[in-house]
Figure 1 (cartoon, rainbow, N blue to C red):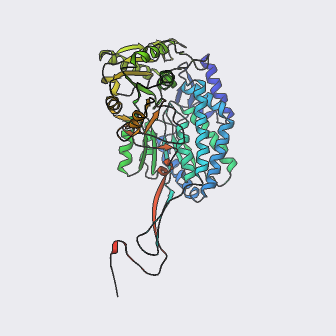
Figure 2: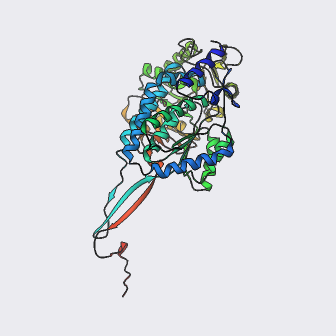
Figure 3: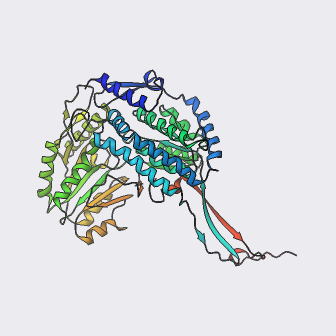
Length: 507
């Protein structure tokens, strides 16, 4: 497919959603499709000097939005979900064009947005606090949750729209406006989502104030202006650990709340009792899906020595046969890496693995759509020890394979990296599975059984420990991150007993 047709298709989708052509046709930020490597748009950027005014509008919106009843706020999110349902095919296609995801994954990302909207609508009627017993007679303790204020969202290229929705759907029902700074690599999908939100807000009516959802397109200076503004009490940032350190430190200086979703060097343990056919299918998707560009991608496979020779050669055969190609020109399962830097990072990691004694299967560049597009065959790397590049997250389809003898050794390998996002175990021995899930097992925020570490559902809180940042988004009680807690002591009697038996009598 010619680059001009990709550009025309992207422009047609944006036009269908009502995005002004001036926002993507004559700007200063070039957008390259990884499918061909060619520029498909030129997006208008937000000058860093305009960020304070945008946040001021969001702060004014907060003062109005916090007064709207939560179930009514949920109605706006319901309408957003309806817009996403109607635009699912087109938005999913735009994700494919801009990120290079295969078609089903682009559509799946939009479905994830729809799902979190459904979750948030129900949540809008359940933002409850506790009623607690008081030690004082005729007293009651209660706990309330109030909107926190403007929520900043900084998202990465690999899930360009889903991560915004995880944060925005919850923040909106909690009573918070959102200000979004997407990756510079994926501004087109952000423009599309911004247009869909505006449609939903127009249908919702006057209760949705101007500035309720703001889009800032730009580079690091725009992100820093958002992170440093004292009117933004909560910032959710998704990206590398290096980025998270910088963001976290800046937020800590002004005592703002950070929701950090950072690196993942995820492992799966294959035990002697594992169903190897199921394991083979699960590992293939977890390690090669999205061309290895998920924070939950499987990067380390820790295999018991008794099943190593039965599993790993079959897995190597799958790696040799997996289809690599353009996501718009066929049904390939593995699409392109986002850009040259990603491919160079993959090549560097494989070189380091060879130097450390690893045996590399695959990893070579695949010629698809010319020199400006970066497709690579996924790499399976048998390693003698967990060292060198195995300890690092390379955002590419590399799977390191290690042997183990007993479960304690496997768990030590699983936990022996700086990151702590996701993990899994394959096995049918209840004792081993439960040990892996116990406090003595995986140290990650996500621990799965008989599936890979990727493919999180919105019903559970998403996030991890250690260098993954500790943040939680999406389901469960992650909504509390977008609110402030208030404890209330209520005296409904006529006397004034003091807590802890303190006496303070006056005449």
